Length: 190
Image 1 (cartoon, one colour):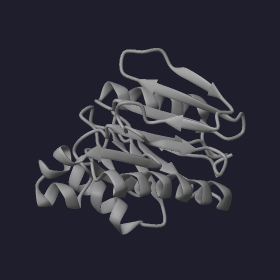
Image 2 (cartoon, one colour):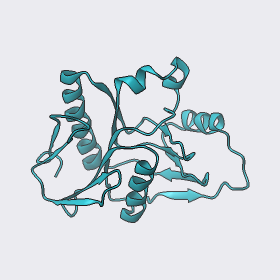
Image 3 (cartoon, one colour):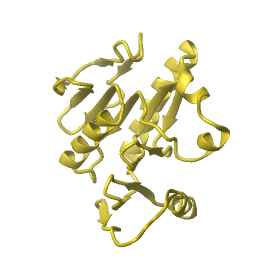
Image 4 (tube, one colour):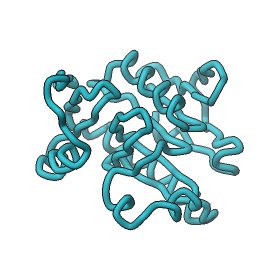
């Protein structure tokens, strides 16, 4: 199944209603774009799910050692400043941002854009749509993002105010100054 986008321009779906829709339909993955369109995403297959787990494992292991922030998996929703609701495959925010959130904000979609995120292109994802989503994250405050395309063995690196850098078949990818000393081992991801 490919992703399905539903125009909800004639419906005033509040943030609370969208949250309840997601909670009441846990077998589905929903996002909303800045126009309020509902995006229904198919679940990932076994290979993609396994690679996502490895990505989160590596990111969490680094974070446990450094204790600089919080790591989130693909089930975590973000309410971006543009009004979009997005759920990257893996993401990270610094402790300061986490500590500044209220208890209620921590229990719902996080009202911010992650500082760092990873999107792993699955067979049902559209490359151009996912590239646009990466740009949207940057426009909303993300500092570093990676779009991993296993099919082409490429990683697109997104940084604020810079051209997208394409890494071809890298052995690892550096977290640069956002996630100092973090290097994602790509051998288990390919």
